[in-house]
Image (tube, rainbow, N blue to C red; front, side, top):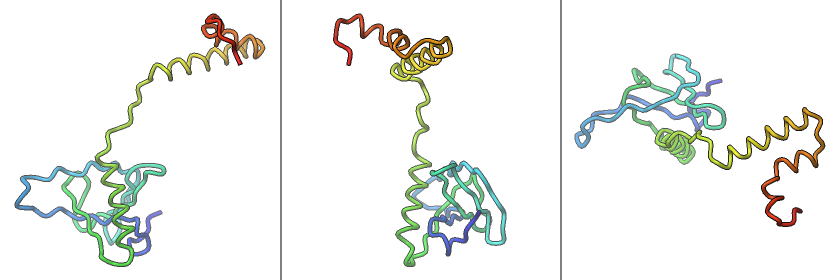
Length: 144
């Protein structure tokens, strides 16, 4: 569902960026449209997914992949519009999440698989724990 910017202050209005004398060339915005709809007032885009999704309205001939500028009407909703714009900017310039497995995550996945395999083989909880925590049990420290 796409809301009009006057109804939803979280909708960010974008237009083609003007040429600024102090900048050689603005890079295009790296948008990630999850949904789009062309309407009379412009191109509506949902950028991102889930709780990170932000509604954008590209006005006139503005399109993803070209330098864009935000329009923020100075009305009573301006603070909310600026917050939405700040979320978009943070999302555009944030590095992608690190999906590599850390040693801790790998060890935890190994233990989970051992527990599932043990349960499928009919092992008791105590037997599963003895296998998973064998290193700790061999250390001589009391287990609680």
